[in-house]
Length: 168
Image 1 (cartoon, one colour):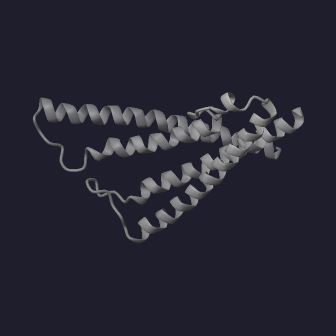
Image 2 (spheres, rainbow, N blue to C red):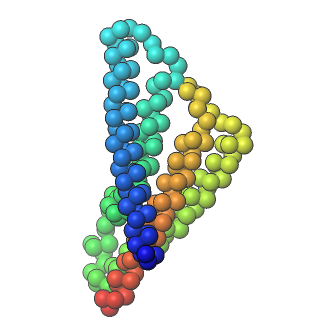
Image 3 (cartoon, rainbow, N blue to C red):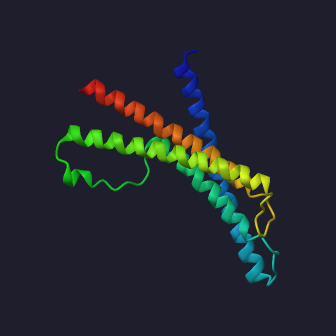
């Protein structure tokens, strides 16, 4: 088995996990919000402090998992103004690659900063206000997602530069 095949299997596993976790997250959010509304407005009861935080934290995880999938597919939201200002296609491609390089560097910086915050939150045992859940659980998910996002952007940059070099 070649390195390319191994990476493809790992990539497929990451996509499988992210998609399934996203599906589970959406179901959890829907059920928890429905139950909260039902208990509060139909039964006129309170579910207790902190239960309102649960769908928020699940949504945070879902956003990060979605970010991994979007960065993999280069399908994130962009505003392409360069077509209006740069007419030459070859110059636009260079600008595109420079912008992606800046994004790669930024994601690496955010990965490092998230790692530092993970260590901080573990050291000082930070917890969420309502659920009293250790905050580092969320930060760990963010860190894993930042690593994957950085790797996918780097992979896309390498692929695009190779494609650009072979076409010129």
